[in-house]
Length: 215
Image 1: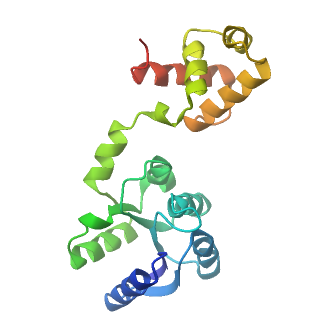
Image 2 (image 1 turned 135 degrees about the horizontal axis):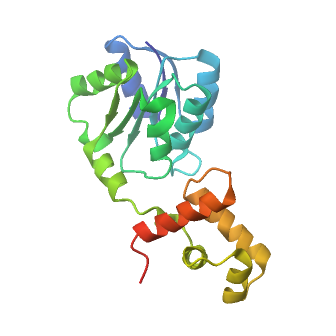
C-alpha cells in the first residue's frame, strides 16, 4: 500500500512513518504542509493518504482542504484525516467525495490502540468509510448559517420573506450590487453550486427556516 503521510510535527511525522512501515505500509513520502502533500501525491501516485488537518501556514484546515482537492482530482484515492478537534469546514465535502468510499476521519485523542488505528487504515484502503462518532454528532448538530456574517443573515432573512434583490437593497439602504454580492456569498457558504438562481433562493430559504432563525 503506497502511502503519503502529511504531518507538520517532525517527531510525530517520523513516528507515524515508522509505525506504518512496521505494519507493511510503503511510505513513499512524508511531508510537513498541505502544498507539499499535493505535490507528493502528484509525484508518487499513492494508494493512500494519511494527513493531519491543521498544517502550515495557517494551522486551520489546510490538510482537510487539500484532501478534498485530491479526492476531486482522484475519487479513487483513499484518504484518512487526523485532527485534534472536529473541523466542520469542508468535512461534508470530503465525506461526499468519491461516492463516500475510502475515507476516514479520526480524532487523535480517541485513537487509543495502535492495532485499531492500523485496522482503520486497512479498512479505508479497502473502500470502507470510517468516521469517529464524535465527528458524526458534531456534523449532525451543525447549523449551516453559522458561516454567514450578520449582514448576510439579514439578506437571507429578506430572501426568505420573498424579496427580490432590488427590494432587499431598498429595505437595507444599500446598493443592489452589494446585495448581489451578499447573495452570491450566501449561496457559496451554504454549498449551493452555480445553477438556476431561483432554485438556489428556494434552497437558501429552506436552510433559513430549518435553522430556526425565524422569530
